[in-house]
Length: 362
Image (cartoon, rainbow, N blue to C red; front, side, top):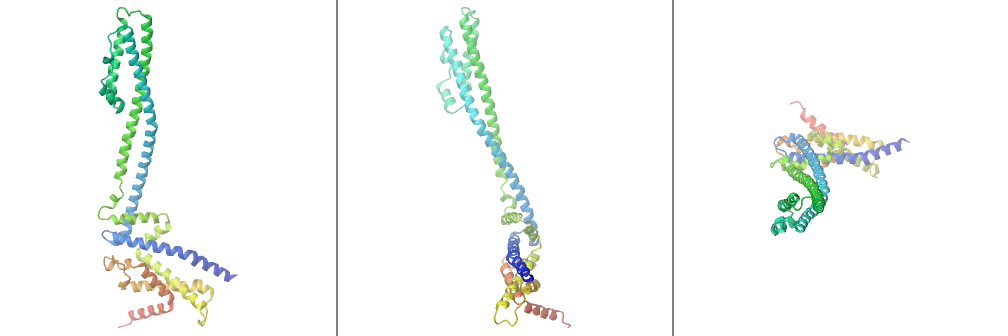
C-alpha cells in the first residue's frame, strides 16, 4: 500500500506540481528581466515601477471602459431619436404645407390681396430647405407663410367678410391646422435639441477616450515598460504569480535553480534505478522525494556560490556588478541546477572544498 502512496505522491509532485511551478517561476523571471532592462534608474526598483504603471494602466482601462459605455449609450440615444426627428419633420412639413395652401385658397376665393409670391420663399431658399435640410432656410420660408396666415386672419374684420359664416368656419379649420403645425414644430425642435445634445456628448466622450492613450502613461523615455506592465496585468489574474513577481529577483532565480536541481536529481535517480550497470537501485521514496530534495538543496546553494562570480551566466543588459545576480539567464540557471542535481554528491563535495578553502586558517 505504501508503494502505491509513494507512486501517487510522486506522480502528483512531478507530473502536476513541478510543471506548474516551473512555468510560474520561468515566466516571472523573464518578466522581471524585461522590467530591469526597461527600468529607469535603479534596476532593483523595476518591479515596483512595473506595479505602479500597471495600476495606472488598469485605472486607465477602467476609465476607457466607462467612457466607451457612455458612448454606446449616446449612440443608442442618437439611433432612438433620429427616426423621431424624421417623423416630426415630415409631419411639420405636411402641416405647414396645408396652412400655406389653405391660406392661398381662401385668399383667392374671397378676393383678398394675398399672392403666392408673398407667401413662398425664393426657389434658392426652398432648395436649401428641401435638399440641404437648412433649418434657417426653412424658417425663412415659414415666416412668409405665417405672415400671409395672419393677414388672412386679420381680414375677418373687414367690411364684406365680417359675419360671413362660411369664411369664419374656414378660418376655424385653418386655425386648427396652424395649431397642429406649431405643435409639430415644438416636437421637432425638442427632438432636434435632444439629438444635438447627445451628439455633443458623443464628440466630447470620443475626445476623452482619445486622451486616455495608454502610451502616454509610461512616457516617451519608458515606452518598453508599458509592455512589461501589460504582461504583469496578465500575471495579475493568478495571485501566486503576483506574489512571485514581487519577490526580489535573486529569490526567484534561486528557487528556480533549486527546482531544476531537484529535477536533475530525479533524472539521476531514475537513471540509476533502471540502469543495469548500477550496483544498487534506490528505493521508490528515495527516487520521488529524498534524491530530489537533496538535489534541490544542492542547486540552491551552488547557485549563490557560482552566481557571485560567473560572468557567463549573466544576460545581456545588466547595468553593472550590482545587477549581475539579478540578470542571470534563466536557461543557464536551469542548466546549473540540473548539473547540481545530477551530481548532487559531487556538488556538495565541491561546496565543502570551497568552504574549507575559504575558512582555512592563514
